[in-house]
Length: 348
Ligand code: SF4
Image 1 (cartoon, rainbow, N blue to C red):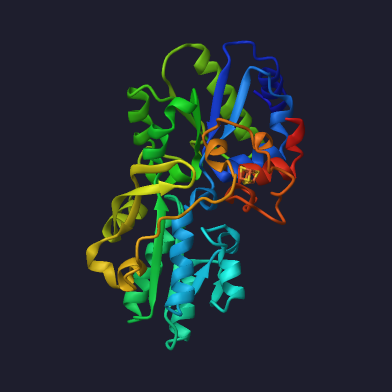
Image 2: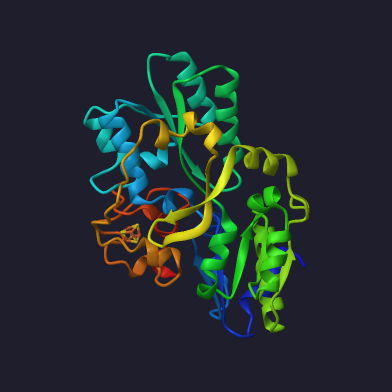
């Protein structure tokens, strides 16, 4: 089908009402940017789930990073968005204003290089993200070992998607699976989910690829059986990237992980294995447990589970906006609240 035919199909869909959850920040952003929500049939409800790494990073994790910066005199290196995410008592941006050393980098490899060039500093990289980014975090540790660097460590909050798919299954009728995650993991996890009644379609990132994946999703849903389709075969294969999976397995092991606003999902994260404890900031600096207190009326957790739209949050567009984010979902361009705000979500 051409783009205009796909568009017409989705516009005129009159089958059973369906909730489709995208779990990828890039999908969230692209769906808004392409204006797809504006013409969908009212029977198709899109939910922006927990696919933005910044959005799901818990308060306690930010508190750990602030503890390192202010109490242990550690240089924190991080992607820029994370610096603005609120912890229990402010963000890393605030910690920087209080004298903490917080440096924005563009990759974990930059952070490792910074540590190499500054042997007088203890450097920690904030390692957040999903299957797509964890390999590069692990390579930074591998390089530090190769380079004999002992002033570099990572603070892990890396997540894995399969546990989240299962945990959130009651919030959606079908997932729009993230193409880049499954380029790493392959498709077996989706096949297994189908066997357990969880449906979804792997989607690419262009407008046509997203429309195709959505059209397949509503067509298959109308048939009434659990389904899985790989609608991004030019990139996603059944086996994924065995080399990347093996690399991550060598350095990390599964762990329970807290998702901001959602809670702890068993085995939905990874942490460094014991033999790499010297590069695990939590162990290296013996960070005390941080409870992480959610002090605001932010409703990110409900947004991420599709229970409310960002516009249902009383703070949306008032106390909370991209210049002054109250919650993590308003920080990153890929966050649901930020995307709603940027593309005029008040009308959706
Ligand atoms: S609008 Fe702001 S405060 Fe409300 S849920 Fe979104 S991020 Fe949280």
